[in-house]
Image (cartoon, rainbow, N blue to C red; front, side, top):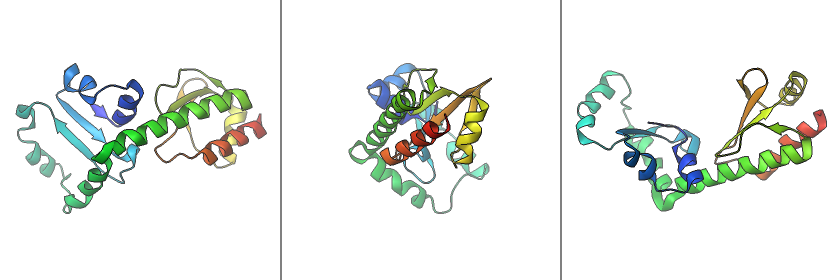
Length: 172
């Protein structure tokens, strides 16, 4: 399972992690850390010991064995302690909900999918996109012809949301 946004999914669903991993038949989870506050690294979690056989060898042969792996692993201790990973994900998810609501209410920007995690999908015309990009914001087209994805993170602030919404208002 690609778990880049695993924390956001668990926080959004309000379920135990096992419900969407081994309880759902997942054998291996690549639990992403960079979208949850870790500078680099992922945890690879094997739910079936047999599937982990040869993993260390394969990692080394592929050139993915960091010489100072303990430095990559250390931030995970703080992230996993007292469910900081879930708190960070809840923060990102809530920031996305606030962003979507403010974009709709203040800037008249249409959201095209429900906000279920830390992503906001909006419909924008090219002039609006050029204007917001010219103000320094970076986001990308997600679905043709005019659907864009705006992401919130564990570190998104209310000030940043206000600044982005303000720029949309000024352009529209």
